[in-house]
Image (cartoon, rainbow, N blue to C red; front, side):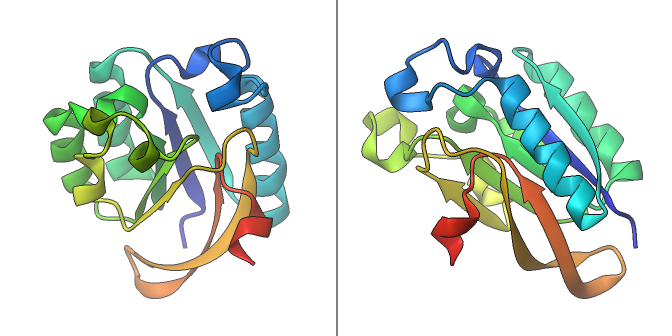
Length: 162
C-alpha cells in the first residue's frame, strides 16, 4: 500500500503563531510540520507538506497527488468558503481526503459556515485551536479497496479523539 500523504495548507497559514494567536494559537507552521513528520515516522508514512497563498498551487499539488499519494489532508483556510476549483481538483482524487481547520468554522462568522471542500472530504476535523499535529487511526477507502490507513494530520489532538 502507498504510504505517501500530502498535507496541504492554504492561505495565511504561513503566519501561524503571528496572526490572531487567540484564534489560531502560537505554534508556527514549521512546528506543525515538525510534529507531522514525527508522527509520520512513527506510523511509517511519507509526507509531502506544502503551504501556499495561491489557489493554483494547491490545485497543482492535488493533481500531483492523484499519481503519487494514498491520501490528502487539507486545511484550505479561506479557500474553504470560496473555491469550487479546489473542490473540483479534490473530486479528481481517488484516495481519502481529510479536511482540517484550526478554529471551529461553525462558531465564527456566518460566511465561514459553508465549506466547498466538505463536499468531497471523507472527514472533517475543526476547532482544536493551537493543539497541533497529533495522529489518529481512521478507516478510509484507498486505491486498493477498504483497508485501515493510519493518518498523520495537522491540527487534531489525539486526546480529543479518545
